[in-house]
Image 1: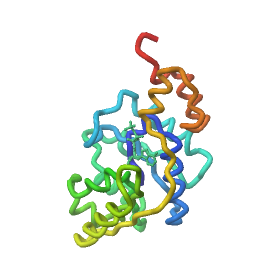
Image 2 (image 1 turned 90 degrees about the vertical axis):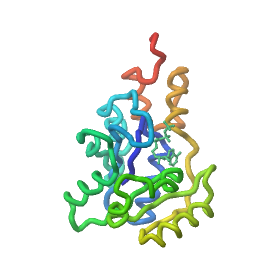
Image 3 (image 1 turned 135 degrees about the horizontal axis):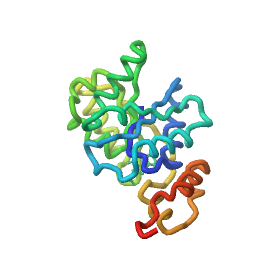
Length: 197
Ligand code: ATP
């Protein structure tokens, strides 16, 4: 499972989930746009549009699926409940929770962490601001608490949703930042344009 705001999903997200699917030989990666994130302001873009952009971005790889689990659940989108739902749907499944490096460092403060750690393997990857050594040290700490962890090594695509929104607002091309289907969707729906337009 890989959760996020995905406002919009971009090439960095897609490369990350594809790489984890290869590394861990995953049958399925559920890409889960959040409804009301615990760690961030709620997105301006409606959930159904963020979900549709995820669907479009992932449509050429059958292992990668855009999931509406959190959008259909009311209240704060805590990962614990999302994982519970995934395991109800597939009781024999094993869940790998893919998190950005910043999120990985904050895991112990997550809602129902003590139960979540029993259900998943926490997976992450280093980024510019968080080194592999920092992540491995934190992974060791999490393992000492009984968690299962996996710190991957991969080259990340340097892009953020913030950059995509800024470029779209300026009317610049997005072709190196998001898949073409997502770029078309953003243009067709006039997403991220300044309000006066
Ligand atoms: P924003 O710029 O709006 O903060 P974002 O690009 O970080 O958005 P989110 O939807 O908030 O995207 O991120 C979901 C997850 O993807 C987070 O765990 C984040 O760390 C991770 N992530 C974001 N950008 C990349 C990238 N380029 N490569 C790999 N992971 C990324």
